[in-house]
Image (tube, rainbow, N blue to C red; front, side, top):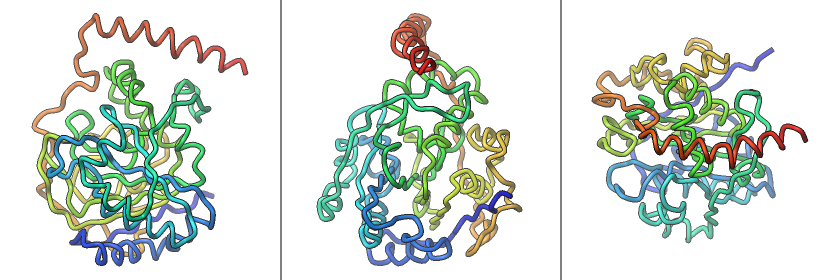
Length: 322
């Protein structure tokens, strides 16, 4: 019998470290606290959204204060936290530095790692050629730390989409081209990536979100919200309900429902606030959706096909025979 997913929701208004730490403790308390997820000696990956270093005042990335407080809580539970992400452009350390991370993470002596890809088995045979971050798969615990944002290609980006950062940078471009003509397929790929990474805990930064033409071209929006769950699919389903966004319009949520991974809101346990207590009726979605494949010219697609055969298809055939 499936365990009922639980999503913890609270109001939180400040990134002040003392207040934020208290908010996070309250958020995790009904889930058993950080000790329910982290045991002494565990190597714990903290996976924030480190999208870009170019718009540090626009709330495009997970706030460093959230990462700092979560890292403190991991350390208090006896874990060994480290920070990692795979930005499409630039390094994790470079994007973190541009967004003011370094003073806080230096204070905790928190390592930043760059992601490197390795081939892994996935539940779905269709996506068994996924390259995923070895650092994420090898971690004892993965704590997913997304930012709530609108998205010009996927309507919304939350917990599931944030785990696409565990796909090596150049492979992200491949997937945009390979699956970009089919929103359902692209959403399914993102869900299978999330299922393969299998985060132990997702904590969503929604004190200040990013609405409009996200993931980076929109504007900050105060939501005064923190959310947490061991079930990333249920968490995303709860957030679209709070923001009054049609689940069918978000490819990751639609794919989660199609694969039986995402409960209806009525089937989710909310031990603290109910979604309606945090309801937002005027959240701004993108002005228009862009093609997921970026409308790549034919010559670029031809190049990607060559790279696919050389670096993905042939190695996959070898891998499949092991």
